[in-house]
Image: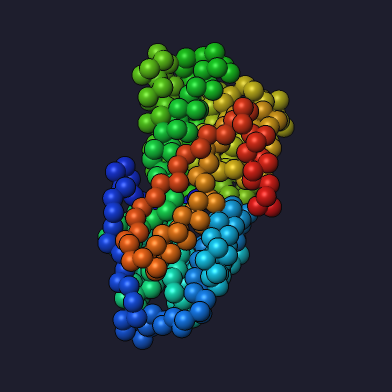
Length: 340
């Protein structure tokens, strides 16, 4: 939910836009008994994506993948199981995908070690692989490319928005901006939190404000998140902003409505799911930072295709940090509606 996870809503870090070595191309014998499939003339290529969670966020990813595959006449399969994310279940889905001898795969890497055996298994089999959406810290050592958001720069955008709206809405030059992280230790969200702090510091330096920030732990479930938000808000009398590292601004918007606090603090976060877009349209939230999940499907597919058909090495691709606010939420909502 999300580049580095250990993430709607994750590490590559700044400066990761380097060309990387690709997996071997062709039908070499595989370690562990796998072998890259031989393609009969006229046969469809089979390309499989595995996601770590079956949630609405991945609908645009799936659409980008399926639509690219239709153009290339691929047999496309998108595998995901349940919610919340389950590392063991995702590992099993990856194993199933590799055992079916695909021509190429796209994997999410939501853990810093658990998926590496499958990633290396694909590489050793000569099966092109691209990571998408989340890659987790240390993925570079695997020499595989990643298509997704660069989380520290995206967090910086989040922090700049938080401080700007805190200034505009409250008129105060001091106060606390709460940074919501429902999953401490998840590298993607930790990087977004770090970037958010950097953005707040940058705004302070340029605008003469002196906003503090504090990261606290919420939850992915609405009931638990609202309880923790309520406790933290009541314990922070000088709060001027709420900046989520995921889509917790939706929950903060509900809390604000329930407590007569709408418009009295800045509220924003990440990802363009329906609840977040509805909150922005209602002005109970003020911004969200998107990561272009459609590109995470389409561009990942195009990089795999480029390797399969032309032998070019794939590369990291930053899907960006789109800011959605009142000025463009209507157009973005229409755009996202096509994905259901």
